[in-house]
Structures are given as C-alpha cells and as structure tokens.
Length: 466
Image (cartoon, rainbow, N blue to C red):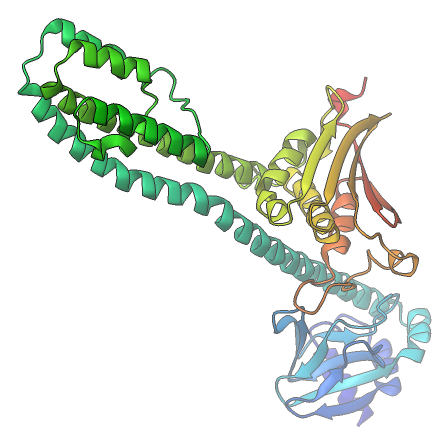
C-alpha cells in the first residue's frame, strides 16, 4: 500500500518534482482520508489539523461577509492545502467543503518541523504553494473590499446625481411650456406694430434677463410678497393678473414695468409682458439646466480623479490634495445624510508623493468612510495634510466615541469588525494597511473618547526632496 501511495504522489501535479525518498517520507507519515460530497475538510475559525495533499476530488472554501456565502478558493486533485511549512495561518475565514467525493493524504501538523528538516525540496515546493495561496487570498480580499467600496460609492453617487438629473428633467419639461408661451406671445406682439422706440424700451427691459444668469433666490415669503406686488401692478394697469406668477419669477424690476407702461399702451402691454415673462422664464430655466449639467460634470470629474480609471496602474507623482478633494466629493452624500462637517486643511505647496494614485485614494476613501460611520449626527471629520521631513503626513480625525483599548489592537486584523453582520467585511483597515505598505508608507492610530486620529505617512516624490 505504501508503494502505491508513493506512486500516486510521484504523479501528483504539485509534488511530482520532489525526490522519491521525500515522497516516501510523506507517505509514511500521512493518513489516507475519504470525504463524501459536503464533507468539511477544515472549519471556519479552527486551525487545520495538518497538511492535506488532494489526491482526487475537489474542495472549495466559502466565506460569508454579509452578503451570503461566496467561494474564494478551490483545490482540486494535484493541489495541497491545510497547514504548510512556515505558514502563520491560525484560522481559516471559512469552511472548506468537498464538492465531489474526495481522497486526501493528511500529514499531521506536528510532523511539519521534521518535514522542513528532512525533506528540503518538498518544503521548498510547499512554500511556493503557500505563497500562491497568500496571493490568491489577498486578491480575493481586495476584490471583496473594492466591491463593498463600489457599493457605497454607487449609493452615494446615485443620490448625488439624482438631484441635478431631476432638475434637468424638470427644467426641460418647463422649458418646452415656456417656449410655447413665448411663441404665442411673440405672434401677438408682432400684430401690435410697435415703433422702433417702443421696441428699444422692450429690449432694454429684456436685457435684464440676460445680464449674468445669476438670478436672485428669494425666500417663500419674499416670493409671495413679490407676486402680490406684481399682481396689484397688473390690476392697476388693466392687465390679466394670470401672468403675475410667471412675471414675478423673472428679475424684471417694478421700475422697468413702469417704463414699459409709460411707453406702450395697455392694449399692447399685455402681449409685451407675456412675451417678457416667457422669454425671461426660458432663460432662467436654461441657466438651471446648465447649472445642473455642470454639477453632474463636476461629480463625474471627481469620480474619474478618485478612481484614476483612465491611467495605468504604475507608480507616479501623486497630488494628495487633489485626491483628498475628489474623495470627499464622492462621499459628500454620506456626509450630508449625517449633517456632518468634513474639512480639509493642507499646508501651502504640499509636495507630491510617489505611489499608486488609485490605491492612495482608496486609503482615503476607507478612512474617511469609517470616520463618517463613527461620528454622531452633525459630527465632524477633519483631514489635515502636512510635510514632515521627507514624508507627507495625512491625518483623518473624527469626534466619534473613540476606539476602546481592547479593540484598538485588533482593528487592522483581517475580518475583524465591530459593525453588525452585513454592514462590514472586517477588511477595510486590513486593506488600508496593505495599500499603505505597498506605497512604502506607514499608518498608526490614536484614540480616546471624542477623538480618533488615523495618521498615514507617505514618501515625498524624489523631485520634491529639497
């Protein structure tokens, strides 16, 4: 039986390159195990019993991070899993379950020290397998955190974009009505056969609608008072008061109306005022549509700058202040929902840092988003950036309840979260630390009741080292 097992190991995809005497060592120390479909090889939170060499079948690890179980790893015949030499794994994040009837060779964890001492080539093979597994886990974690961030970003953007989009839709609908009114009033005005002098007076009044497009925003009380004043003026001049509301919405002054009444007889004045109110109203609506479109454009520019989706993922000189502003812009909806104040205080001529812009912005997004979660309604988040020798320090400070000392030591651990199930993956700060390290930086935290500060140090770009 031992000979047959060695032959199977020599044909194993991962271990086939190991010397035969090392495969014989594994076969002598291992135990053959069979698992049916649904059998659990390793359980979430429990340290694996040893090294597992998958001979036949298929296993998958499923992790539930609030949105239901999701497969993050899979092992087939020819793979190895479980505890590997020099691995620091303590507890897997999910169950590894047999997807097919499977057979494994299980080598107890207590024998791995002897394995490292006596089977050098096998140990090297298994260490490479461990590194591949770490990369796969990291990739999965990053993907999950990006999806969570994308969900938050999408929800915020939907809210941010909805208001200007609704304003454009409303403005376009009303603009069509105003243009129809303007056309009818223009036809009526043309039949009045006004003189050049009278037309000049009308043009001067009409110009008040096109001075700058910066129309006065009145309170409801001020608007009601203006409508009442315009309605009284129309009644005094024998003109249908039905146009009072439309005329009151324009910036036309009462002195301009008096100038029109002094130059144009009452028979033509009604057509003139209907034309003016419709024309001015159309201009105002066009400005509102333009402003709403510019708001959408500004949001898109902020998102584009935040994600750096049009740039290659290579290290570059990164403008931190621009990235911070873009990040705050895409999180504005969440801040507004809590009536929170978010401020950015940067020293003048803050130097650029060298790093990966998209990753650095992800750092700010996670830290600011966490700060917004931590603060109470009408709370405050302060972002401060300054140079410290050959580093740039960015501090994200909130006035929340603080992080208890017992929790503070674990906040950077993978899958650790204090949020309710479904509201956090426990990966945010772990991802932040990985991204900070990938950009040659460092992160630290200080917390007390009423004040928590995350401090990120990133290296100044070479060209800015003076």
